[in-house]
Length: 238
Image (cartoon, rainbow, N blue to C red; front, side, top):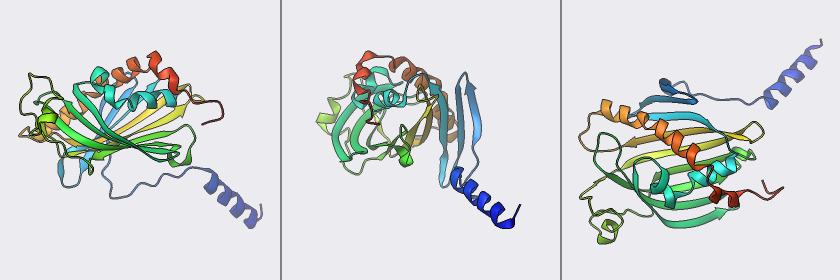
């Protein structure tokens, strides 16, 4: 085969095949849990004793439906593990493919007392230009900073709670990947969260990943709820 033709074929292959670039200085992922269709990994984060977590599992529902569940923030206290307060503070449309939500929540995770925090969350359709994919990313809010000292904030909590601890590190994202022609969804979940307090880092790291079977089950059980039928995209509107 002529050299020019070989070069042309190699160039075509390089364009058509997806390329994943992994930085050499990124810490490796280590598998820490495998449970049915759930796999959980963690890795070191520079400057933090708390590891980043990655979880992957499959839900038997299309991505638009799973996204509706993941973005049902006001109802998190009804179905998400350990969540006792879930309050949407604001919603804003960025463009046709993106929307932003400011969200206040409080949780009672394993091994620690109640924690609370405020997040800015961005939902993105057509993640990286791929139709049917979604990304839902969050970080500590720069728009609102609710505090327990505010009487209006206290009213959001059950009366039995007193002086919950404020979290200052929580960032991550969901990536929803359509598989089987969007009959199922593969969930990629990333989070780096430090619950603060005096809990030893090794216990925090363990608590951060043992909750994922509950998270997986919560999404799988919730996604069949008929309330999400209304989010089905119109034909040709993907």
